[in-house]
Each structure stands twice: as structure tokens, then as C-alpha cells.
Length: 249
Image 1 (cartoon, rainbow, N blue to C red):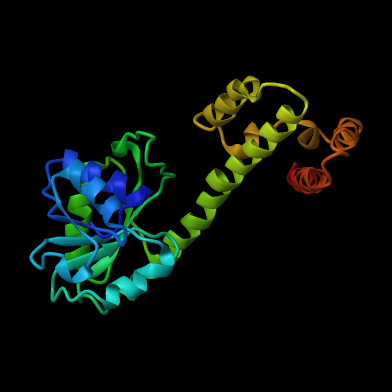
Image 2 (cartoon, rainbow, N blue to C red):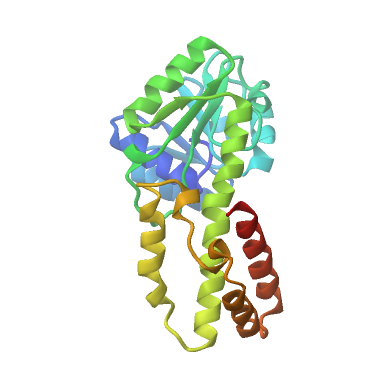
């Protein structure tokens, strides 16, 4: 396991719980490497040259900007190497091995938040069929949702994931700011958040859309804009989102 961040931690724990033997954990921060290694009975190291050269798979789970540099410092012969990134090409791993690919989990990860890995989609891509078969077999040991996709599909999924996760979470953040500013406990919004997401299990996002913009209720939208006068940046977000919804509905 090359990396010790959020994705690497959840991935290592899932593989370990599935009965796989993790031989080593690398991190530039030796304390982080030691912490994760202690969880999965592995050796910890902060030097790439000390990584064992006889593993079946080298899983690179570091910042996107660091993947290429890591690959250039690995000499794995024909051993399989894969990265977990959603937005970068698998070809950055070429310097490390001819057998390379992608092992991309489509999920948001926080180190201390437990997840049911069996429900997490794993998107597999590889330079050759044999490597893809190995990665697919491994993925099925930890997830019930395994997909073979190409690079363009993976990158499109990554963009879509930003919309449904990162952007929506930021909207929750803004809502917390608004309510807190007016001495309202943001907790009151949580049932609404849960139901908004729950509805998507039963209908499309288009048909689940409600609110003043979807109804074309300009009086209510104008009142909201007036209430947001203390938050000029939020007024702009509200206007932009409302206009976009009205165009669709």
C-alpha cells in the first residue's frame, strides 16, 4: 500500500478484513505509515526503495500530483501496479511496470468514518486483459459493485462525483452558515437532507426536484434574495442555482 491517507486507509482495511496479506505500507510521513501498518499487520516505511519487490499488487493511493513521481521511483518488473485516482490516466504508471491499471473507488472517504466497503463501486481499468482480470478478481473480494470502465468513463464519473458529493456538501456547509448566523441549530436541517437523498432511491433527480425555482415562484425567490442581503456571495449562488433549475423545469 503506497499511501496512508483517507482512501489508502479504507482500502487497506478492507483488503485486510477480506483476508489478504498486506506486506508493507509506505508514506512520506513515517508516523502515518506506522499507524496504518499497525492496523493491517504490515511493515511501515518512508522509503520507496525499501518496499518489498515480491508483492502481487502495488496499490498507489497518494495525491494525484504525486502518482507520476511515485511510479518513476518504482521498479516492479512484471508485478501489477494500480492507482486509485479518478482523474488521471493509468499510463502514468508505465515507468513502474508493463502490468498497470486503475482501482478507483467511487466514494467519499474520511479516515474515522466507517463504511460498508461491499457497497462501494470499484471501477477497474487496465493496460492489458490479464491485469484487468487480476484487478477485477481482487475488487470482487471487497465489493459487490465492480465495474470495468474505460478512462473517459472514469473521468466523467469523477466529474459527476464532484457534483453529487463535493458540491452538495458545500451547499450543506452554506446552509449551516446561514442558520448558525441567525442562531438556529443546523441540526434541524438533517431530516430534510436525509429525505432529499433517500428520494433518489425511488425516482430520478429530475422528478425529485421541488422548491420555488422548480415551481417558478418568483415572489418567494425574491423574498429569499432579500433575506440573503447580508450574504452577497450566497445571493449570487442562490440566483445562479435558481436560474439553472428554472431552465430545466
